[in-house]
Length: 207
Image (tube, rainbow, N blue to C red; front, side, top):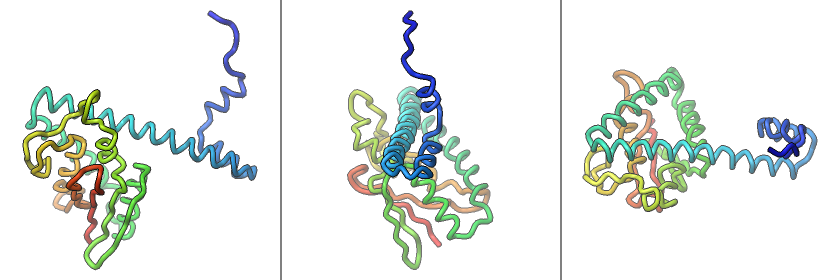
């Protein structure tokens, strides 16, 4: 084993610091170029972790669907989306419509893609340009070799009655039907694009 150091202690200490702390320090020091570099680094770090977990859950759903079939896949999605929706409901409880929409958009910005947001007399419409999770999976070719993530073959409710429906996107159906609190209503309604990935999906938050 080599006794030669790879990094200085200063480099190790810097690597262990949060990018946010380094970014704020650069801003305080007036180093704009360093701050720009760190902001891009922070984006790349978050996107990498985002996609890791997105791909992991899609691989897990693929395993469930291929091994146990559509019925068990449905049950798994209903159980897990229902649990996360209920926890989300606690955060949104007693908030105004304005606050709920702002919170929802803040969460969607976590997908790190641009959003188009429009309002009319009936609702607020939020569109991913592109969808930062399921849409990007399609664009990245994750349902083709070598990943071969599952597409739900049979048209059914969780595939929005469409054939060859990407398994990750099936969670949107459950968000559409599961209320955020007992006896309540879903927080929003998602309408998937006809050409997933190529066209934006739309989320409707009704007033």
